[in-house]
Length: 168
Image (cartoon, rainbow, N blue to C red; front, side):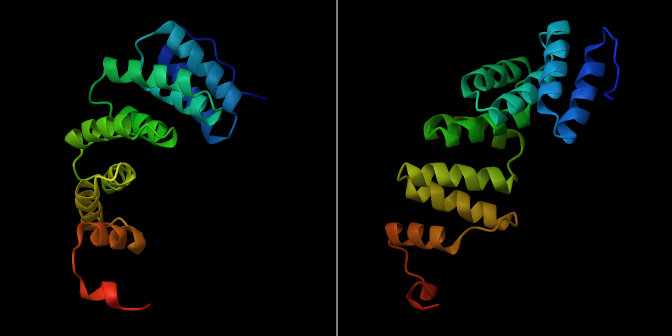
């Protein structure tokens, strides 16, 4: 049996949705997030979480709408920027992904995972120097970067390195 809830407090619905997300009950989580957002249409965290549920269901346009609204409500909502960047990346919209990642990195410049993702976006656009710089910054934050990516960047930038000539 589920957790019974009768409340006009949006945060109560939001908190229960997180339990449902944790237990994999996606439809129940979405339902609770809908209630929380209906009670408070400006609930940025609920909009962000509902966007993740929608992305999981393949509803990219609806998810994008929720993420944009969450970001507009709270410009420092780093998770929304990151989620939007990942969504754009998956859709092949690298310019938009870079915009969201750059916004996120303004608030958390040490986020190695986001640096790596932005580097991948740059590489997909053949902006190799920017990709290489982000990859090196990500490595400095302890993020593992595929050696082939760095090798590709170095070759395209014509950077000579002793390890490039070695056979592994």
